[in-house]
Length: 133
Image 1 (spheres, rainbow, N blue to C red):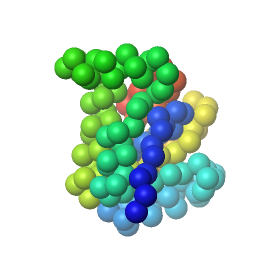
Image 2 (image 1 turned 60 degrees about the vertical axis):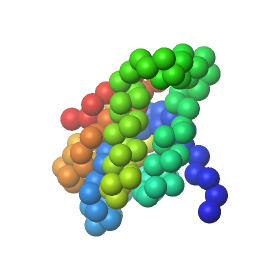
Image 3 (image 1 turned 135 degrees about the horizontal axis):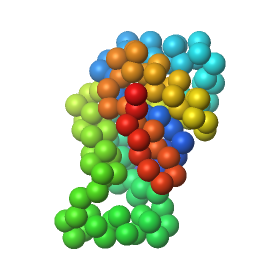
């Protein structure tokens, strides 16, 4: 199999669900609420976990600064969040991501994922990561 590439999930709400049934239910709920299939992405398995681990982050000079921090042993919240999603994938759980470019869509996506049992729900903005509802 080829290598999976992961980019920074800009303007996306991400959450972790335990089972394929939970993933399917959350996807159906999002679609019923008016999200488009193209706005919903899912990750699972060790290949995805490897891709999350090797993902560079935001890109550009900010990515270089963050990687330098990792190399020197400094921790950052973005790295800790990334590690949690990687661990979930390695543990056999699923990551679901929803494109949400407005505050209303972000709030709705986070609410729906949380109501469907998703944990570790976060919104990835341009300059920060916010914990979901």
